[in-house]
Image (tube, rainbow, N blue to C red; front, top):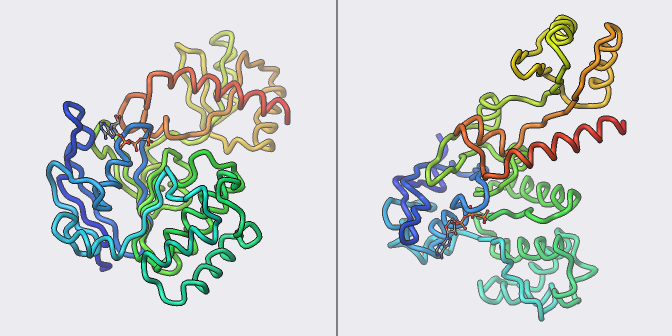
Amino acid sequence: MKSSAIAVSGLRKAYGDNVVLDGIDFEVPTGSVFSLLGPNGAGKTTTVHVLTTLMRADAGAVRVAGHDVLTGIKEVRAVIGVTGQFAAVDDLLSGRENLRLMADLKRVRSGGQVVARLLERFDLTESADRMAATYSGGMRRKLDLAMTLVGNPRIIFLDEPTTGLDPRSRRAMWGIVRELVADGTTIFLTTQYLDEADQLADRIAVLDRGRLVAQGTPDELKRQVPGTHVRLRFAGLRELDAAAGALPGSTRDDQELTLRVPSNGDSTSLRALLDKLDQQAITAQEFSVHTPDLDDVFFALTGHATHPTQAATQDSRAARATTEAIAE
Ligand SMILES: Nc1ncnc2c1ncn2[C@@H]1O[C@H](COP(=O)(O)OP(=O)(O)OP(=O)(O)O)[C@@H](O)[C@H]1O
């Protein structure tokens, strides 16, 4: 069995009356990616701060690389790298200077070569001598992560590394995380994005109101959540009956006059579905594609929304999906 890079038990942290972590337990095997998934304000950053010795917990035991975070602060700091939501990048220095400063702070040998290799790996060589203030959001995140990698930390904490990034930069960041894992690095990743945790994590823990409400592999978690489906609403029971007959495997709701049809949501399967309705001359009053996201995971696992505006968000998402489907 692999050893634990991180072991947490009974972790508790409150800010005054606000209990942010109410006794959480988890272990992260060495060389794996563990994702802490939760909405805004769930306590993800607080967890990272405790695990990285930046903050003391009120109770509980935390070991990182076998060292207690209270008594082994120096040892823990020597083996970890932390990339935060608020980049440690100094705007007034160039990318190269930022990296060089980090290499000097960590007393890395052959700092110049290490910096040059990191610039190349992160595709930052061309902009290396420009002030970081001129970098785009994606470039800053890359530089931030490159700075974290100076000194080859074996355990890396990535706190919402892709929040605010465009899809291309997100994918580039995912690629880098995968490379790190292939090298045997342990990654602790916090995210608000279900797809990110799904793409990267060996195990996911879902944080809700101070507790971990679920832990498992992405597949185990997704099995608890309704998959991608098409939702159809009909004018009356007659149409609903006919559609349910024409679309085996669907689930009906007689009160709402809706039918939920499992579908991967791509244009071919949507066209096939509409063709089947057409062949029987059945008209749906409403048609929307629903892809599971963090809200769905939360709803399925906790029975409540991530935030009060969930209903509105889902409506707008459904409307967007409908528009996209129609545009196909
Ligand atoms: N220093 C602090 N003093 C008081 N309350 C705090 C402090 N830091 C965080 N909080 C509160 O603790 C809760 C959890 O915050 P935290 O930043 O850990 O959440 P998060 O899951 O990382 O959220 P986000 O996704 O928005 O970054 C929030 O309600 C926040 O307002």
